[in-house]
Image 1 (cartoon, helix red, strand yellow):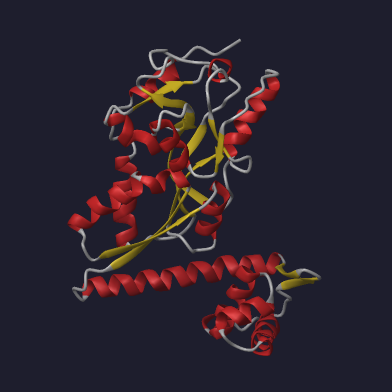
Image 2 (cartoon, one colour; image 1 turned 60 degrees about the vertical axis):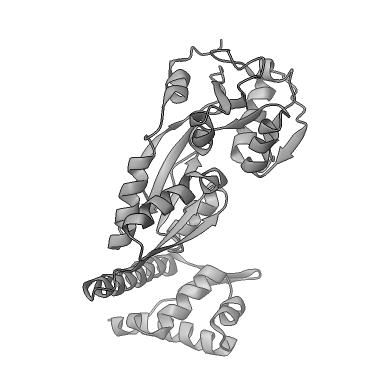
Length: 318
């Protein structure tokens, strides 16, 4: 029988770092120990559990099926230990906690910073970390225990992720209220192609969807600005540069101020994203994280939903 007591020791911490880093050498650097020390701990784990945990390859060390199972267990145990520590601190009257967020860029500009500030007016002892990346980066951070909550626009489900909230997130044409198309109930990509456009960089999922739709329609769009920064593209619009593309929530504050219009794009080829709030499946969330999660889900539909309703009511383009 395997000696499960070894799962409570330093070996597991070293094991998890090797899984995250992809090699013993990189793990040793992050742990600030010798590579031989990491190798010994991994060998000890494998010996005590009676099974190899990694496949050794030319480009690194990859967990096998047993390694993936252990990594999933060990990560949840580590997160549970952190949760209990935070709960005990709260019982002592410290009233503190930390919420680690991962999000795609649109949520980091206005929505999450403002929500955090509102939340801290009632819970001043709670501190936050926020990382920004692609929708796959967000999911990976949640899966690896580096983020408590992920919020992103996604294209497909991710195994191991619990979706706490989801709703369609149509893409809109974003323009000044004075733009010639601003009074239109909806527009096509062909309509937009006649004007200066700001498009996301080709690596970004929204750009890929737009390019696919254009290819199907033999439509050529030549953007005057390409960027991986939504903030830069929206500022381009505000500077009277032209039209950009966005879901509703990242520009909600500007819509409420009346500075821009979000016009639905009439095309069944341009499928909506899904807005998702994500946590790690099977994890019990610390009190501070759960409280912020509740506030986050409640805040998503808060504002005027006219733009979203317009998009849902639009007729598809034949």
